[in-house]
Amino acid sequence: MSCRRATQLISESMDRPLTRRERVALRVHIVICGSCRRYRRQLARLRTALERLAATSEMATAEGAPAVLSPEARTRIRDALRSVG
Amino acid sequence: MSSSPTLPTGTTAPEVWLETHGDSLFAFAFSRVGRREVAEDLVQETLLAGIEARSRFEGRSSERTWLIGILKRKIAGWRRRQGVVSEPDLARMVDEQFTRRGKWKTTPAAWGSDPETEEIASVLRRCLAKLPERQAEAVLMIESSRLDPEKTSKLLGVTTNHLYVMLYRARTGLRACLEQRLFRAKDR
Image (cartoon, rainbow over all chains, first blue to last red; front, side, top):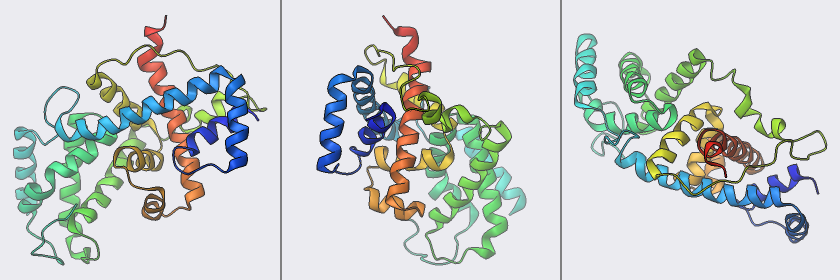
């Protein structure tokens, strides 16, 4: 199995159950390939980061402000809507 | 996601849109473009376009879904203007990272411990903004909103097999992007 195929199966294993044949082949590859083991660990960390992103984007932006329209933007948009409405 | 339960069809006044949908549209835009000023402008453009297109809203989807549809086109336009679409390195990371025979060209680097959640979130948003929009959408639906693959593939209008390919490409692109922007400097 190539690393490219192994990484594809690693990704797919997060979305669907692998077939028995795929599972065995992937396990054999992972045992001998440190790079693909690392890829698998990093995808798990990516998943956690993306899950947290959902939580943080509801609560706060990167600058720590809430992920809602700022009062200034709200006023600006309201004015723009009024001018055409 | 539900909106204006009293008005299942037809639209409400634009000023009500800003109150009922403004923050949702903003959060959606922000998750895609990663920059507050840009996201705010996109919300404004979306609402203005919504006013013009109001007569074409048929009430087949909720008002918010309809507005998000407009917002997505505005985001796509912004990305085109930024030249994001012509940035092939993340879109084709899978092809970039492996040799023709499927071996790693550059093996994944060791990642140190996680930086602060906010720092990861900020870099991740910038990386998401560099993915093709459909891939970003797919990976956010699956990993952030925790939709199941069947539902996600229906919403995106692709087969589940195609969705798996999109997710593989998105994860591989994001992994490489995080490594480059967040972890490389912190290597042992």
